[in-house]
Length: 79
Image (cartoon, one colour):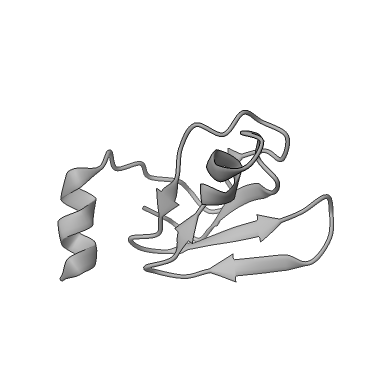
């Protein structure tokens, strides 16, 4: 699949359920593509959004001021 091809082109990281991936306000240095599992996106204690397989997460910080605009947490085991 296209997602598997992309996975071969990038570094793969594994996260356990509930593990913090990055914190709002951190310097943005990476973009994440959800290969398996889910990522919970939360802005300053507000509404949580769940991103599923195939979603791109964390790109906004790279294209704006360079800092994370939301915290990302693994929702289930996530690659």
